[in-house]
Length: 133
Image 1 (tube, rainbow, N blue to C red):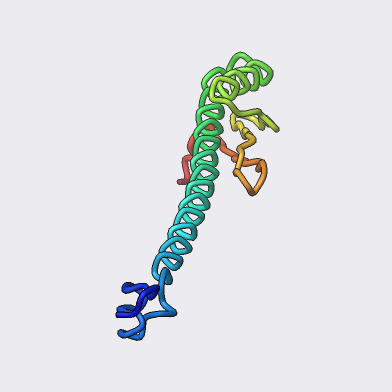
Image 2: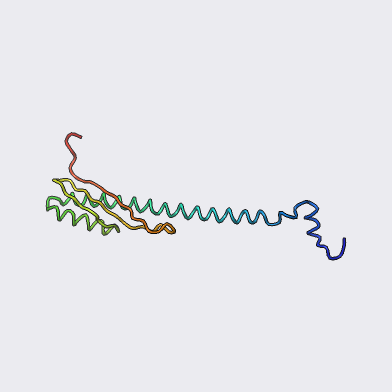
């Protein structure tokens, strides 16, 4: 072997791998970065979906709470819906009482990370069941 020549380089060149040094490492790093980005996006979308379900639960409970005290008046019913919504971390957008039916619309803000803040909305109705079905 000649002086000054790297034995590792000679071995690599002998197998025809001289241009491939580190290619797999770069590929794995890029794949890992893509996987991390994908995971973050899925987590953010999941957070928005969970917030939407919580808003729907708040609307349902608010409408049921309002219907439960509707005999005391529409204002009392809507105040009850507002209190339930506040405790569940949402805002009442609209509370409408028509005869014995209560319709409650709620909204909540949720952070979607790089996608910014989003507003989720939900609506629910509560009242007596019709005799016809």
